Image (cartoon, rainbow, N blue to C red; front, side, top):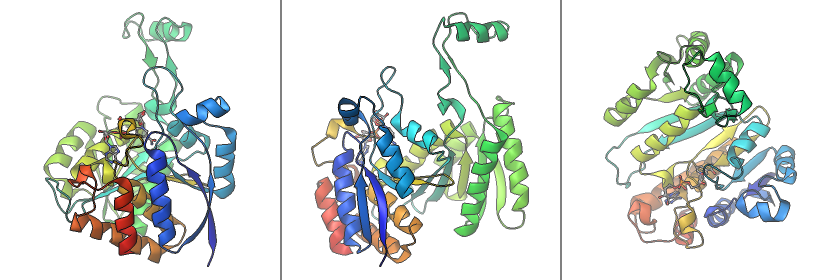
Length: 350
Ligand code: NAD
């Protein structure tokens, strides 16, 4: 059997404890993985004077696959998001977030099976921002011909044809490979005619290539939010610019039982980084409290990507059984088990 080389980034906050459990669970499937641990986040700051050391990016470039715990981003001040930096440095342009209901989860909905494809490199996440009264902000205010108030802070929202083409194509290719029926492009193109307008025009052009194979529809982001709450079962794959994709990811996680069960993956042309949707939940750090299932399900996506399809299916079934039995689940799923106990229960079902 092949040994896969994978970079392991434990992250910070509750990241290291859920990574620890996830590694044990993945190893219990019998798949051989040589993990290369790499630092990033608040804890790396003290050691390397940067939250994202080059050695970490080099490790992902070498191994091409990484499993990553969440990383804290200070709000307002301090370093910029390490998560965003990893996606940008490695050009991990597509973020895949499947959201489905597992039997036993207490949710207002059942039978949800949605897939979010979020653009990962453009939009308001590009990090092009100008502080109030900076020379750049003043130039833009002048250019805006009084549409922007004096002394405003400014964030730029870039959306390109190339960036949109590749994310929409990713969504359609995913739909074809995974027997999905429908892709919905989500924008606010009625208001942002140039940026979201370009996203929409480009999505339409790509959708034409898949005519007859995959159905295509469009929604405005505000209406999409309402529709997802009222009739989520009518949607399938959704493709969105970065910020809307971020927000809809949490909305959909809420539909299927919360962030504790929402996995994710970031793909580029050359690399793949698997991580849960949730953040570092720092208030629970070291308490053996948070749900490891979101990262374990991200591990299922990773095993599938590595070609270990049987192990991926077996692991997903084990997770589903533990959720259904409801005896060894964490607080967010209504149980009293800790992170490690949930992990062990999943191992026992493999
Ligand atoms: P969060 O996802 O950490 O937490 C939101 C809520 O969900 C909290 O109540 C938390 O306790 C709960 N929660 C999160 N994960 C859980 C789990 N596995 N099991 C049970 N409950 C869970 O979001 P936040 O509080 O907005 O962010 C905390 C930090 O994480 C911030 O610094 C943020 O920037 C960062 N963040 C990182 C990533 C990433 O690494 N990809 C993603 C989102 C947020």
